[in-house]
Image 1 (cartoon, helix red, strand yellow):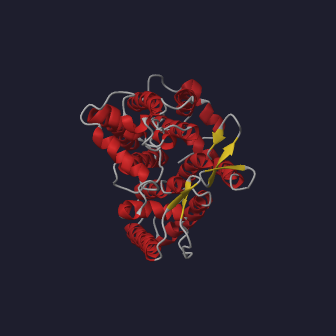
Image 2 (cartoon, one colour):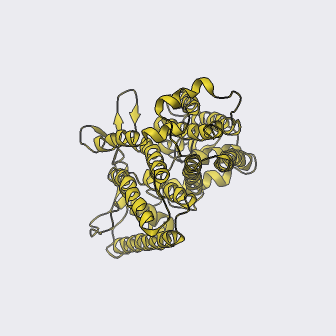
Image 3 (cartoon, rainbow, N blue to C red):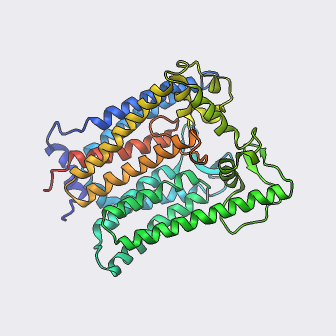
Length: 413
């Protein structure tokens, strides 16, 4: 495939056919954004803060980014993928430096500029998507030697940001990257043996994590220690160091999911218990906007009600009807993303559309499953609804890439 230069691609602003916009995703995104603003307002009604209005500002900026990215041919990003990746790695290094990175809740994940706290892991998601697509498009995948060469490059390119993100620590951002990369490998028709090996490795990792968490809970129980809360992070006393690179608060989340009876209900297990009450008490039509008791009275902590657990607020105040509305809008975005991948005329378009769609699928599934007790608490936000500037902007950029794949699918045919 002949790749256009950046100047050739930018010239397409003047030559592309008008009226070739996919309207499904933009309409669904606008709907989700509006829902997010209303329920961020409701979740923070008893708190003196401008969160809902700030979210509105981020959505407007995100819409600008979405439009700008949509107007640029997606093949332009292939020509700058390595530069974009290199620039995205710099903030990941800087955020780990004491005095530069801003620490909150025991994690050093933000670069604080005063008027805006930037989370480097969000731009890293975009960088991993682009570098993965670039390596797969530029490489031959056929023989075992060719496949191993590509996988070696990908392991380095994806492994570096993954390690840097885990060092913050930011498990929620790290766990969304492997499914995205594996989906892109799958549509590249990599050998089935690789995926069989990857599945075996995944099951091994799950087994190790389960063993480590069980040993941790058993140690705590046998020594009479308790799970305590100290300045926003959870710690355990005298836990024998494990070779598994987990923090105690991460082990606590696993244990709180698998064995909630072992967790102090006022501690790590509180958020999920209150989330289940919120979702379960909503009924068919909910208690009414701003009338939910869990968030309004602070049972669902105000620090998480407007971001990680925003779906719980929606379910309580708008019930099953509101929940299904949100799920339907996300369903439109995800199924339409797969449709656009099928319409793409080249491998790059397929890779970008599939990668973005799978990334969003993981975010939506894990966040909602977390609020209803199907998976452990991870802190993964809900796209376009959860409060957060960096997250909103990265979501808009990624969906702008999908729109670009749709708009320019007939060019360079």
